[in-house]
Length: 401
Image (tube, rainbow, N blue to C red; front, side):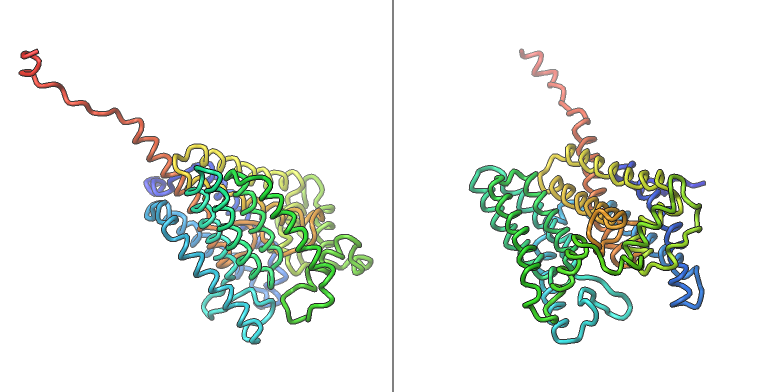
């Protein structure tokens, strides 16, 4: 077997191993969880979604390899502002097209025929890169930190506000990630408390004023409904027919060791078994022990991210890794929390495991950025280890002395 191809898989080896495990698990569980969907949509062709997932995982791994081997880390700093401005234009376009009736459904997805994508995914990565760039440049004085806070919060409020109209959970995920990045970036605590209080106040305001807002304005009523169902319980739960009920049933029936691969019954009744509630299906088929193992993989990834940050000699790459690592770990925790009933029902896929298309490719971009920094750290470390060449003094000079 030719192992020379492994030389292209540069960067942190542990993260590459985690990606391999997550990829294998994704293929197994997506094939099992999409059976009912395949019968409804593709005439019983159960291989359709498996082949699709293989394609996108392969594409994602290719994107990571390309980024690590070709694109220098400094490129992301140069492109950060342009990516952010472009993502804001996409978000504004999505809002305008939604109110014009051109975008159907929730208005969070651009369908370009050949492929579709969510502008929020572009904005999520772009805002993290921008925040990393600002924090990296403004660390010397208190005035620098205050200036960084103002600049970051202006764009965070704009991006999260635009996303909030169609996708509250993604808006909250981005907001929490940026808030944590600023905390790590030594932004004064009083500023952080002010922002946190504003965020809580916004949720309270949405809850109490939702009935006064027309149905056509975003998903305000959906946000209030989900909060009420989480606090007071879902009336449909009395019949046991909600997605959350099915998820709890899947976890309960899986027990410690699970029913076995492909033996899920609950996935036949869940509309989002292959996406928002995929963790519940993992536990149903492979057991609670395996489910804890999945959580452990994301925790290992988190700690490897910390190691990469500690080894970084530059501020921008360090903050970029912090933000991209946090956003994926937070997203995983949200998916797991929703599946287990700890958090209100919301739509966040399990990174690199849930059935994905372009969303999986955007996740691969985040992994690519992290592994690029890891590879750059290795190069910098090797450069520092090389001995400094000192020319021997000229013999004639020695004789003169």
